[in-house]
Image (cartoon, rainbow over all chains, first blue to last red; front, top):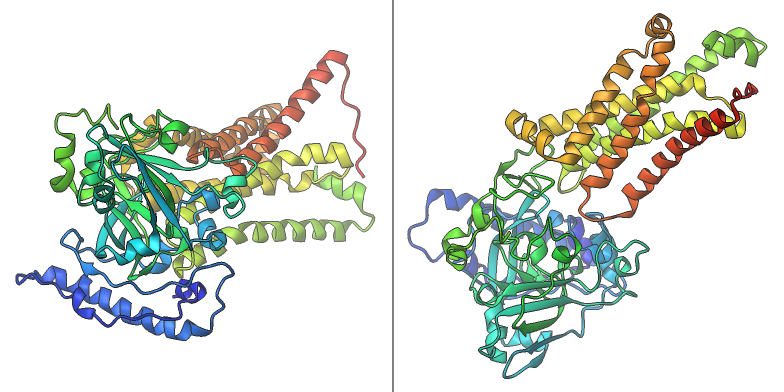
Length: 332
Length: 220
């Protein structure tokens, strides 16, 4: 609630509540409760936002705006983590290494205007202006599980569209086998990029195999909880790959490049023994320093219980085929 | 030790003894404040998204801070002539209490008493192994911290309690290893512990080279 107020959320329009009503005729009783919780939360958020109208808008911070999105069959039925936790517990080292640093510091990032360059091995390399891009795609709400490599997890209602939409428009050449991503490099707006002891080499870079990038689960997210992304969550546009550890889902992207060679990725470069290129969620393959068998759900209080981590973060039915015949211990 | 300090430092004996007791009690109460406060915040859902982790890390950090305070007493006296030796036991015990609470949080709230997961962690995860080592070293030190044990053990007591150096070094390394990348905070704590231990090594080397005893330190 507080978060919304400090974001200066002046206007929340939610006319089309019907998008939250499942079309499926056979609704299991177990599905109903989370749904109601979700709607109730939405109502509370709207009430809180109304109260928060007079709250100060942080300097340079963007005002969260409502986004229209249709529901997706890829969404989980699990109840989403509270917005205040999603926006106050972040790993975004460009804004500090503490979990609450991004929420405190990310307001300095200018997210408008924003250009996303998509180039490399493509017939029609294009500079997309994010606002134009948003008006030309069908936004979907994707409620995804997020599993951090550190052993905690959330459920996040993203708003976005498939990455394949953008890749399709630039027409990848036959020689393209990988996709490289790059976060914005702006030391004057990102304190972590000018830190005395940088946590990583900047800019942050990530990569996917082309088939992973084209998979329907892989999205570019521009919002969460029905509104534009808060800066600390990777505004204005970020990747979400739900079956991989969170750090693969690179934030505030300025460049996407189709390549023939496997691209360099930040955490792999930092510590190749601990972080592989694939970084698929896998309870069987431990991080060298800790077990990945279980995860601590966020927002469940001091006495929250760990739960078992699922292979590919529970998306095995959709993505296991991408890795058929591969030794997942070797290609971790 | 206690009585001597009281005899030397103050003219009205009773008030000095009372003052010492009051300061020591205050030290314990204030020292345990962060633990009580953080646990209260956790119970009332004010510790953020991952309250277990915040509690666990806060307790661990205070254990390391009190270890550092314990190790700082001697260099502080050498540098300034002010002796806080009377309070060192309290500082050491506070370090132990925090380590115990940190350990308990890990076992109960973090791992949910899953003994096989805990055993696997201790064997396979160097930072857990090292953390456990630090804690294991502190246990006998805390157990022998009372006056009776000090008297009964004599010289062996001093030898045993030098193991606190190992506990501090292990705790600092434990902190360094737990973070995902090199960050400022654990590096700073590691450096402080390194300086405090290095100081003792330096004193010892210098002392043995010159082959002379340390000069008596003025009490005031």
